[in-house]
Image (cartoon, rainbow, N blue to C red; front, side, top):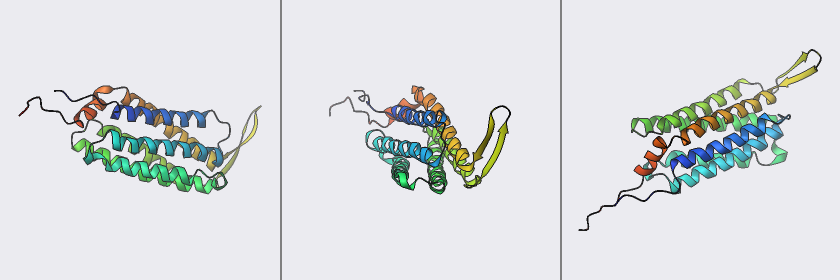
Amino acid sequence: MSAPARAFTVRHVQLMRALFAAAAAVMITFSSDHSAAVGLSVFSGFAFVTGFVLILAVFLVLPAGSRWPYVILGLLGFAAGMATGIPMWRTNDLFFIVVSSWALITGAVELLAGVRARRAGDPTGRDGVIIGAFGVLLGILLLLIPAGFTHDYTIDEAGTFELSGIILGVGMFGGYAALVAVFLGIAGLTPKKADAVASASVPAESGDAR
């Protein structure tokens, strides 16, 4: 007898992560306020719900041998979401400290897990490598931006504007979220890779009664 189809698969995890990343990217892109308060508010929600999806995947999708990266990523998402969820704590320094740390650590974990998965023949290992690389890149870029950076510039017939470190940092996070949304959306809509993992994680039942 063939194994029963799973209602929740790796493909659904990818699509849910893409959806939340897209929501974060849209909120950052269409907000005229790129302050730490807005950036951390969006990041807090994104990190928390993404962590929830990853923990959900641990119990509903993944076989025992491949759960550890999702557990770590999920717990880090919860921790980062809670640390940035208190409005009075949302400062420029907190944005750069928490978001860069989260990006570097989760990116490294997902990158390492993706490399190991590829070596083991997991067809979704490539996705982990790329998403992990996006995270590490975000963390490095945020470390390179001085939190107190400010630069005034003038546009003819429009006026003088100020570009600050926090504006750049929040914009970088929005760009990261957009890349994750596009890549995971495409990966989730390509069922051959994701469904192969889901079907492999369901043990086949023997059709012979002995």
